[in-house]
Image (cartoon, rainbow over all chains, first blue to last red; front, side):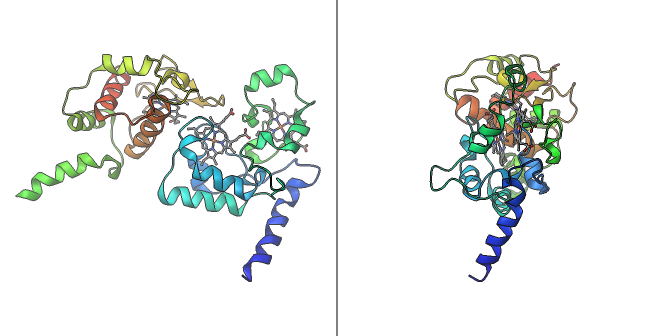
Length: 145
Length: 130
């Protein structure tokens, strides 16, 4: 139990940068298994963009992952879940449904609503395609570009 | 003597235990498992068809891999997917675990079930014919 307060502080410290008004930088994933297994279909999203329970639910439902089977089993699955949860952002859902998409979060909508032209979006195809617009997304950089 | 007979079967039944392979070795392995000769035509038909048993956003292998195995495809997020034909991409069908993982996922997404050894042999025979 002694560990809990320490963890809470660590989590806030880690996610602090993410949830100040400016979110120009979000530490990119450095965990080898996550980089390997979560990069085939899209860029590897930084763990800090979703709260811990989002990663837990996602890692438990990979066989139906946004309309595709992204199934992982055994140790690899558990190891990735542990990494994502340990590096997750703060929970701001206030008890409402667990968010699964970064692109559904209120701050995301707010940041993107009036900033993106129709043409830019059509080129990117999907909000999930962060690196189509943020050229340095894989280095964790989401600032003006 | 019994052991000598059992061992080859054990290897066939658990291809994931092996690691590096080649398109030809893998084709032999799947064909042996299926107990039938592979057919590139059947493989092409399976690959090109629109299926209804799987997930609605992925009706066909061509959804992501295009109709040309020598072409670069695209995941639904827009991320490029390198060609599947070994002649265009020598890394294809060289890692049993990787092949099995993606046959498993993609057959489930598209067909709503695993592909049989015969179907894998057919698809591989077609992809390796380019």
